[in-house]
Image (cartoon, rainbow, N blue to C red):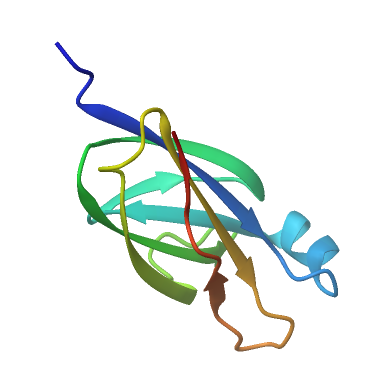
Length: 108
């Protein structure tokens, strides 16, 4: 029987200019198919079923519960991956910038 899950390794990066601020004052959030996962600046892992998914990345100031600041979304697929997929989201440098996604890397 084959494994029906895959690991999505999500690298969430603040801009270099404001990294110190984001590490102290904000928390990134990863959302896959509408389900939120607490994240950290750096690498977090989420286990998903095989197939196509929608990922969103955003941040909140510490203490906020509902804000979705700098949000960006993207579809990705784990269908061709034997062990998982790596996704990188980098926050832009300006106030009001959104996250930018690099193309997902499939681990075969």
